[in-house]
Image 1: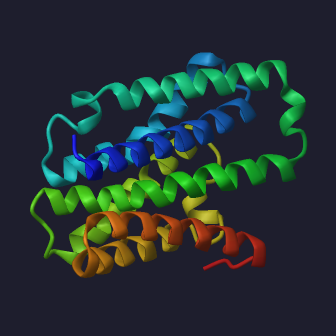
Image 2 (image 1 turned 90 degrees about the vertical axis):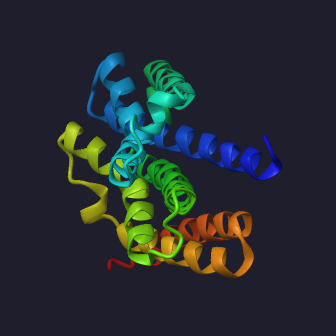
Length: 208
């Protein structure tokens, strides 16, 4: 495994943990049991990637070829469940819960948006800008959308400040930077861009 593949794998692991934690937080907030929390964590972490892979004709989807992502998502979800089970006061108050969700979702959104774009490029669609933006965005927002639908809460993609729009901007940035500077700079810079857009949007109450 070369250094680019190693860094990409590390980014994917960080995104998986962040999204799994956000799914587990939603499940715990909805008073689900450990199985429900784990299911939400896994679907949040891998759901967007599964939709992306089906779109790109990758079968079976990557999560079934490399189950380490699902395993990490389950482990993260179980840890969050027990942490909140014994330390429920940690997330008392909507402000604390919203802050943790903002950070976890923003990290996952940024990383998985660029991972989606990169996957499309590696599948031979480097010149298809529309497809790359779509798979980048669906990778970023798909898992969270499935999570919220299963938890019967208003989907983040529809009610939170610049969520899907941040993913679209990150995907477009990743495509442009890839064509100018290569894969690694594009992924790192664009994932950070999505993260910063989300934080600024929440801070200044942007709602686009």
